[in-house]
Amino acid sequence: MNWFKRSRRPQVSKAEVLGAHPVRNALVEWELNDRDEVVLKVPRRQDRVGKILSRVFAAPDHRQIVLDELGSRVW
Image (cartoon, rainbow, N blue to C red; front, side):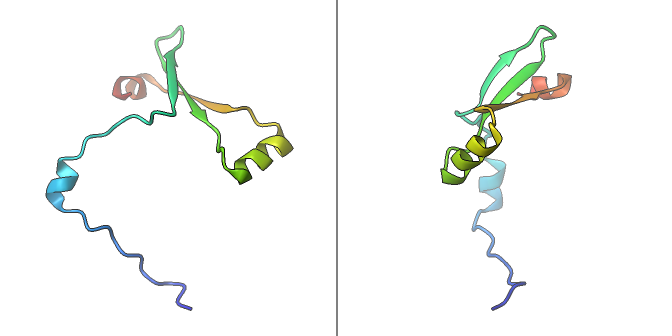
């Protein structure tokens, strides 16, 4: 077994990379707080492992991330 095997790179051309457009994740909800900062609500994992961990640790359904001024502008 070769542990240091190189993974294959995806076959993407330079033109395809330069022509790509970023998109927002449809699962991430967002809102503005009172300081005009963007607050992202990122959902927790919904697979089997995520459900077990959320029961064991009583994790909330979403994780909140507050973006600073620059991050809010980019979002």
